[in-house]
Length: 291
Image (tube, rainbow, N blue to C red; front, side, top):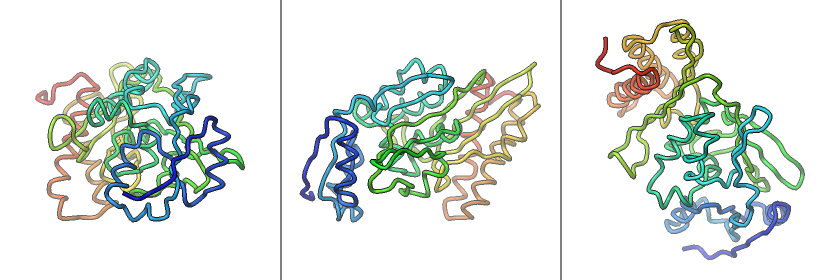
């Protein structure tokens, strides 16, 4: 494993000063569940790392709040914190479900939502619900703060807009007012599995018809996104398995349009369609067997 100096700031201002002082040679460590694996594996992207910035003492980055109509999640909130937060379970159930699906309980006790976002892995479970929520991230440095939509922060697989002297401090979004939401995940097994694909959906109903729809697939695009064409076909319609099958196919069509046909498309196309259909059926209280 690479040797490095371990720094433990006791205030956010101290952490930001250390980031600026050692910019380009320092990596923040929150839960460490990704970084430690990369260090042990000798990941080449860590070749310039001389310092690790331990964030565990920064309790101000762990809060989960609802203030002035905006949900705010501190970057150091663990997946267990998010999964069990009354604020998240009420405002965005699909995000709580996604965090609850991450790894084993020991991982969820340590891994943070900020780390999940900054790692920007295509298979990160929280990215599809955060995309469906139109989430924003707040980035802080000695020079000041800036806020970016998640869609602009994540530039591709493993790539973000985070500057060397910046720290992601919180993730924020408006609650899903009047919506029901659901997160569905496909893995190699039922537990302790990295997502092969997943889907986050949210629907709001008025007079038996769909008045608002959010559909965000996970693990299929380099950057998380909603699928506007699939959402549009749901608006004003009465929920049905047939409608949701068509919506699932529209999401898969979007996947192919963006990423092209690959060796895995023969598997991914029907699998993604089925995941989206299942999520929509579950959030609507429909059995997939219904016609």
